[in-house]
Image 1 (cartoon, rainbow, N blue to C red):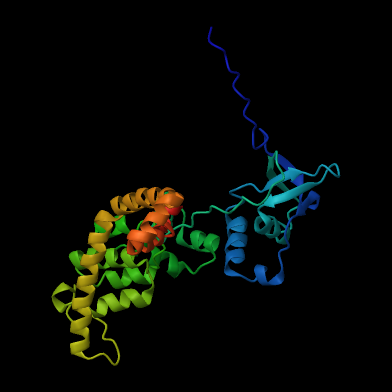
Image 2: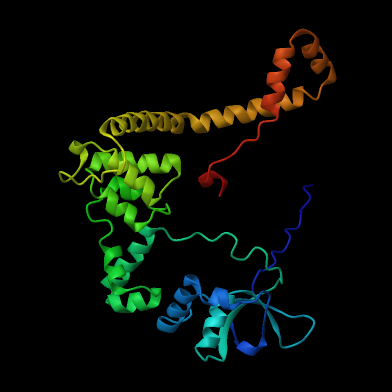
Length: 304
């Protein structure tokens, strides 16, 4: 007769209903000092709360030591912004656990492409540029700049940089290149994990005139001779070919190295094998030990 194993009950992480609490009943687990309140991040949150309202409810936990009080686990800046606006209550999500370490540790920051998509969608629904600028705490001109960010950028580059922290100015530099060179530059930026304006400017400076949208659009690098530029172009082309070849085989090579490393680690735990290698093939032993001690480093995309 088959034994029936009882299924363990799943413990809910949060209570079913949101609760409205007085701001005075919230006990912050960290302080919000004057330096934080003067930061751009806080100013943007305060502007968003003022113009749009609270989008995400703060997370609290009931204080078991004193009735009627709640530990504020997540949302300190939002709560502080509400206090500055003169509010006295806030709607909160109540956690069943008072552990605050994991909150806000896996936040995915919006990329420039994703932010632009949100702005465009909001404007299509009738939200004015001034309203969006006020909510984001930026100038209305910056909103229009974000809307025009992808003008002249080919779809392949947009797909490549969709989730990358690539600044708006970098797209404005890529716009000066023809589509094929845009793709090459985007792949180089990804391969080097460098999306800075300086690197984008370097790619533009090493772009042949034939790959530019307009004649003379290439920014000349100060103190760099034509010979050095030509050499940089050749080296960048070689680097791109190397990066592409590594990307094609990286997953397979990493898997093979992981298997080999695990096998050698187990093999070197055998004293007889180690003694034999030491006596007959010491050069093999050194190499095997080096491989076994190798620390495999995953790329950011895989590690996340």
